[in-house]
Length: 182
Length: 265
Image (cartoon, rainbow over all chains, first blue to last red; front, side, top):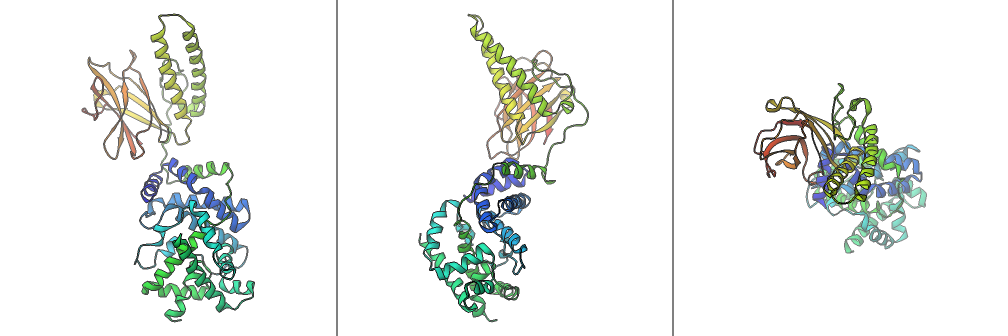
């Protein structure tokens, strides 16, 4: 998988348009689906897809297959651009972390990207998400798909801020172990 | 905020849900703290999975072409520019030499090719209904027909570009044009080729980062014209140029002489 992504990115960096066609065929549906879920607007979701692939084309030479697989990279871009657009509809708070920001974290164990999801794992992810309590799942979904801050989530759910912080933390830990457990 | 307070924020950070002040505080802390950095990585992994938990929706069919066109039009993409000077160029004897390709444009040329294919199809049908004595002629027509159909497919590819080859001092009167589509293959035509010495043949090469790959053998007709159509070499080969060399009849696995025609992408 990683070698194939690396070869594809090299071809894109070399100007091979058929390579971006292959990347599109593999990942456009997932990129578009996420943008649709976040923006609830097909026209804006299409713009996100174009932006994501345009960015991938321009940055193909900088893609490091040792740190990420192409799918995870594209999905990160899709979410960040979709949330940015969503927040432009209201006041922006925190900049959504993208792959470049998170790259500054110190190295240690193997990066999570090497174990990142593929679209084929969608059923498994949905099942893992369903295994969370509603109380934990709701703030996580509001943060991820609606781009709300912890403060906004607390207001929306009529909960104290401290409670929301704890539930997001434990919810994500539980999600991660549910995914690892298979 | 101290380390323990900041550690509580790693999940929300991965989700982009921190306030500006909290984000700055955590980002200052992260480069110094492998524990929190690992927490962030783990949270990013879990959050990343959420990308795939959504209802799948197919993008509109037309979006693919827009994405590819945008990439092709990006200034970074190298595209061969068609030459400004009109070129007199003969392809197969069946095809018109008339106006230059720059004037006609590739699309029209492909249309012209298709109409010639239609005429050729008629000739194949006529040949098929004839009696004995035409089998050799039929086989030759069918192979030319196949080559022309492959040419049309290559010329119609969205990633096709033109490469002009120049005659080297050993064949100063020769020139050639190639239409190269990395996804579909190569259409190649040369003019002004010297007649072949006995026991020799012209061989066309894909020149790549690694070793050259043969693109086929050519024998010029008595006007010095030779043409060929070739599929692209393997996916791992990145073509940077084309070259023609003179080789022993039957071809060789690797060039043994210096090229008499060369053209770079």
